[in-house]
Length: 217
Image 1: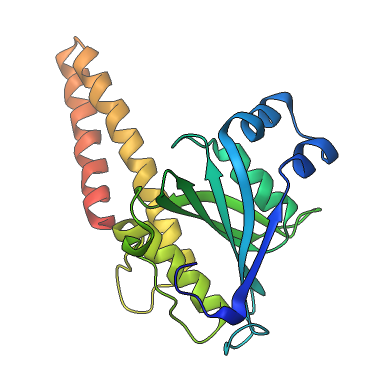
Image 2: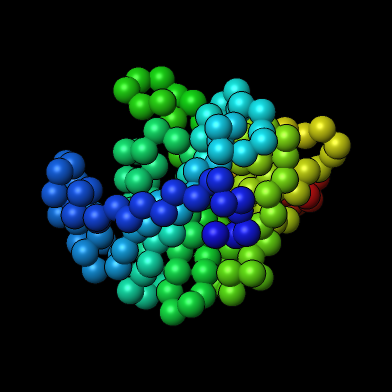
């Protein structure tokens, strides 16, 4: 897939029943597997052993999974379950009626029983496979993964300045989204407020948050 070298091809079909029959999944998640997912195939394995790449410090392998769907809808709980059960970073290639959508989670190391946790997912729009904005770039598995995340996220993770790490870009994007949510709630609150003095206070706060949002951009 994605024009990746033949040395990375794995092409192993994974029965979806393996997940919901043998693992402790909720009835709601089992319903997602049954109703939304048609088939799962492990297409590629990007690693130092399969390509001329330096080993990654954080990303030892990047797996490419093709997930054929029954519609363009897929609940995030499916992605989180896959990321939870497979101890590697994953690039999901969702397919429906010949169109593809690339989805990737930003995985960070965490304590406890799991090696990684996914904070959030980034995705492209639905399009032809050869139109996807994905290009294998980087000299290590770490950099290949980070470039895929940035490519899929697009403007949301465009580096604000040279040398900004992916983690810093993610943190900036999360702060931007949090501010957007605060601003939207505040705007609704201002519309409902009847007292002029209180409106002025809220507008002053709105102006402050809007300035912070612009500075992040």
